[in-house]
Image (cartoon, rainbow, N blue to C red; front, side, top):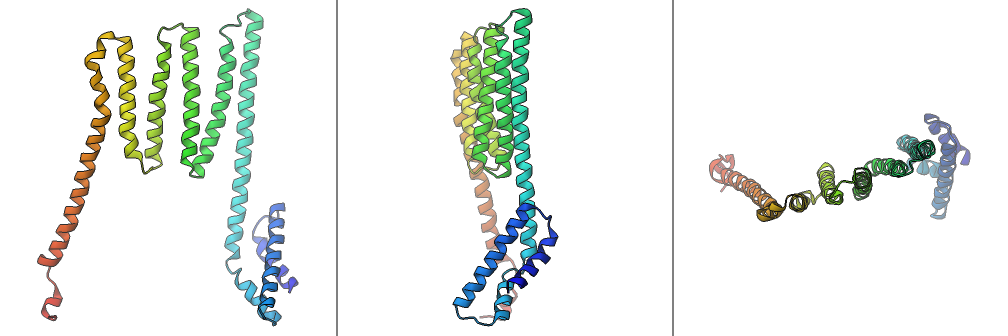
Length: 280
């Protein structure tokens, strides 16, 4: 019996590459087949040929399972290689920019604010890791994880822009970068919600509009004092967007409902029914 199972498996496994993973899978499958045969014996089946045929019936679509197994193994291997490559690239970026900072400091004795090169390298390396993790999250349809990694990358970008404006350019009001960062995170998150067809995408849209309007109002109010009034009108854009959405969706819903009801009326009172002439 075991020889018959082995012969079957040897024939089937010729369709895929003879890898170590395939060998382990073949051993697991043989064990499962023998366990199934033992189970049939315990249930009272004594004919060996009948046991073999019954077990093999469970593996009629085994060729498809083997293709899925090989494709899954290749995909896992590719993903691991991509992650390894991304990690190497991230480390290389950090190391190269750190060495650049040390070299510039040693040659010019300007250690400040050139240390931002090293910080930028660290942030860029982290962003590469976040990007790879985001791609993997999209492949697995883990969109909440995708949003998290994208938001983290945006935070790093915002912090670095703030450091540049504050330390390098000594720009007054550079802290407004954080207000822009909040609006950016909300906007990109809303875009992802639409891209992934999230159930709450239409709820997120007016929220983003409100966040953007408030951040814009505060920024303009700080930069241009006269905007505080009547600039506060910007803050009502979010509720207005929500109301517009509610009106549009209600109109669409009513239109579909009216169309369905009209179809029912036409079917009942306008459309000719041949049964009219034969049924009472």
